[in-house]
Length: 364
Picture 1 (spheres, rainbow, N blue to C red):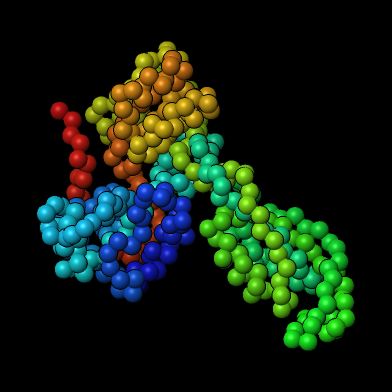
Picture 2 (picture 1 turned 120 degrees about the vertical axis):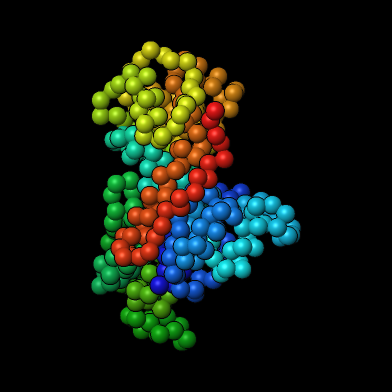
């Protein structure tokens, strides 16, 4: 199996187009055409991780946090990032990272936190804006089912928990073919009226080319009439953070104890107790303080994340419990998602979880 085949599975799950502008997800080192001898999965990458890959005959490392994140002007081995790059290149190790795009997908980092806590009725906490488009295409009725199906198979028509969503209207289209044309129906030089179906459906803009290719491949007309509109609707399937509910409400101390056990953390920083039961829980993997007010707006009882700063705790304002379980701790189970993506299509493949503790923060 080639590296590009594994990467295709990852980018189908979490398209690179979803990553934040500051991010650097994707293949950072290596050749897409190389055959895979083994895969090592980790949250972060350092020279110890690269050594571990070499020692276990793994020529592909898949990690959540990018190795190459800040600008590189030279590679001399002056720091561990540069040492890791040199070591990987010398040993033909490919490195693939999937970061903020993995944070945003519906079953990504925050979903895994919810799964570990045992939350139900999950929704994206902050759905993505300015990502949806609507396409309207006019198709002869004889081919409307074929074109519509092709659009759905390309990824169009998803609204919340529903797929294959479209609006269809029957009517007449008119056109006149000139001498350079090869019309599917009608005669050259004569105005023709054809019974057509107007098909409307939505899709995330990063798959626009796939939708258009599906239309052009299956539409019988030489010239396809279509319109594309940008939508202001929120895309409920993509965004940051998640919110859900515990099956049974529990006390604040019971909830914090649950977090300690599930995420194997020695200490949890938190805001003032409100002496109320915990039922609705908002979470965000990594650094999620920017979502505190969003969690409050959703009337969550608690917000769980990492990297909460001193002044962020004042945002609780006796309305919500804020719990910081740590950046590493909140994202550590991302490796399980990586593993499931690989195993889904390659159940007998050689995949290893890194045994190195990459968490740079220690507790005394």
